[in-house]
Length: 91
Image 1 (cartoon, one colour):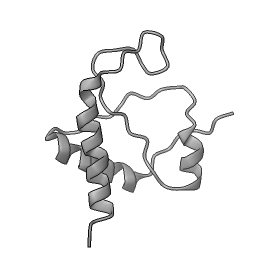
Image 2 (tube, rainbow, N blue to C red):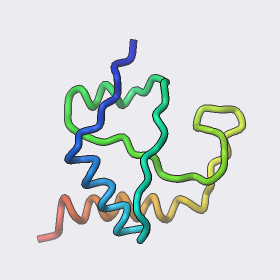
Image 3 (spheres, rainbow, N blue to C red):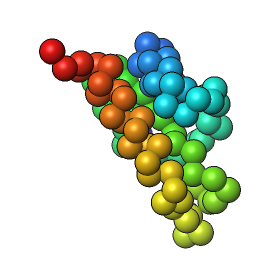
């Protein structure tokens, strides 16, 4: 009984722009998935974007063969930090 997850265009563009500024690479669209995602309920209440951080060549999350790539942590953390810096700049 999960709703369809629909990203807000404005928030998706912002998140992609920040990702590109952090990585220096253009963002890619993630493949569509026909699964349920809890975040869909959040997006029904507030505009937002569900973003996938690249993890290399591994199985999808929640799959028994999934192997988290620890080397992605610094870039993922940098992305979050840059989002905060741009949305909530220090006075």
